[in-house]
Length: 404
Image 1 (spheres, rainbow, N blue to C red):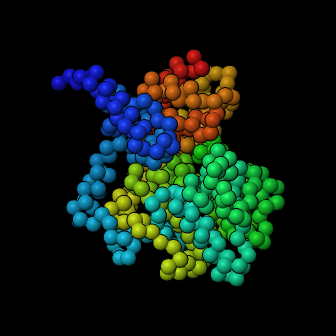
Image 2 (cartoon, helix red, strand yellow):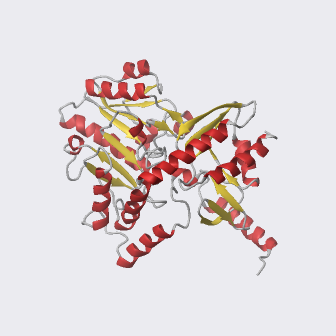
Image 3 (cartoon, rainbow, N blue to C red):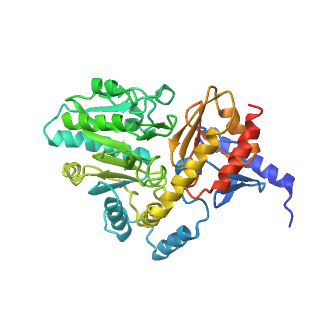
């Protein structure tokens, strides 16, 4: 049966109008409606397909319609336990926590529902550790230029972008800022009053900026010197995105706390705070909580996703295709291209001018792309992407750049 094109267009226009009328307008969305997905493609209500280089902002690591993920979902649904609250023991959240600790530096886990919640918890834990040690004035937190740690009040306070902070001040007090990858700048603000230092080993929203090994090593040394906690925000760069399970594996540096979220449950909402026993010893019953976090439905899926993403052959695939992606992007010729940078399948293409026209043109060519700041296109596709998909991207970008 051939669909009525005019009817489809009318329904799409009506839905977009309804969205405008009833949903708070905090996002600028393109003029189409996505209705299903398969593999590394999504499809709109007219049947048009888009090769996805966004993955729900680095979330859908296994793509769309994965049969094994669906099987785990159905299996857990069949138990009838979607939610129990954290008042009770369940099997999936314990099994996921065990797997996370086995595959990381951490000894304990606290589950949240999102990345910003994970960072909020990390802020609280850093201050509580200092408090339990008797440092009641040791409350300062340090973050870095171009950082993005979330939109709630604590994480927003550590996200030094005026566009995000305007209208919401005063924010959290005792926040100190330093320049990313500038060791002297870090030394100037990390001191005896510092409770925690929060950093993304590879910045996502801020422009796909990669921390140098020397910088992270110095942060570790400064935190040790001043009895502060080093906190890695791997919400976007973790979980296999860079070709190792954790982005900080590429550095000989371990954190005291690590925050996770985006791809952990394959698209279902989850976050996690991973901590050492030293940090955990400062947190007692009643210090923190969440009604929905760690529920058996989401954690059962997350365990499956983590097992898949941590497989050596899977990570090798990410490194191989990620290297090919960088190679192809570097071969693009355009006078406004500044640089290609990143690691694995977390890659940024920087231009001398704003990239929004390229992203908009991508929709016409069947590409979903997203920016990282105003001048960088961020490529964070499903980690199952293949080299031939990179070739398709290259060919379409070449056409788009002819008119850019």
